[in-house]
Amino acid sequence: MAVFETADLTAASYSTAVFGLVATSVLLLLATGWVGRAWKLPVALCALAALVGVGAVFEAREAWAASQSVPVVYHYVGWAISMPLQVLALFFLAARCGKLGIGLFWRLVIVSVLMVFVRYLGEAGFMHATLAFLIGLVFWLYILGELFFGRMDEIIRGSQREAVSRGYFWLRLIVTVGWAIYPLGNFITSFGGYVDDGALSVAYNLADFLNRMAFGIAVLATAMLDGEEEAHG
Image (cartoon, rainbow, N blue to C red; front, side, top):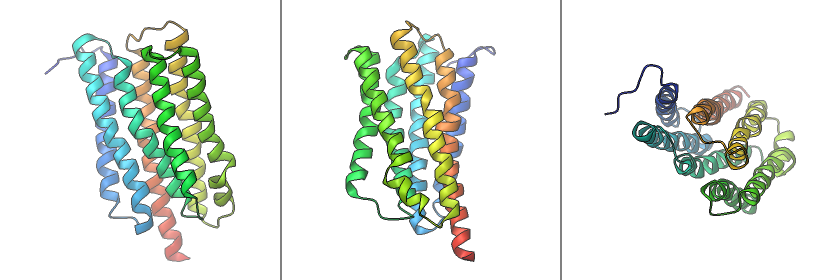
């Protein structure tokens, strides 16, 4: 077992992220028994996203312990699974307020996977960095377009479910503000000539508290508040 120095902030951030993601995963998995049937899938998807994060962050922590560096593949493997799961959690959350087409479902799945995969190709040198960055950015903007101006936003605005509307607002904000760190990190490493000495990993680990943990907790809170509204409604 690796022994880290007290001042190793990068290792500390990895350990904190691992423990936080484990706690979030356990809480959300338990919560699938607390929420109504229609909410079990969104909450379970968030639990799986956090669980994937546990494995990805733990592997990256081991890589840091072995070489004091973390290849980009350790970040992207986790994102390629957890981000599409979170997008689908938002899809099923919005579906509580109205009918969403299967076409939108598959577009969100494909675009969210390609968004991560194309960025990885650029950072790994398999694709021109500028082209990969721009394509990844377009895919992210497409997801934001669906969240702000598409069918999901339309049915949320027309809904009488106050808890779902509030939850959707905050979750959409996380995807907008929190997820911005990923194209920013991609830009810094691809065009700024930055070699991660641990600082970028710390930023990604801190972002996990918002992008994976708070996201899942927000979905759970929305589910429980919506259930209370139905019970008193």
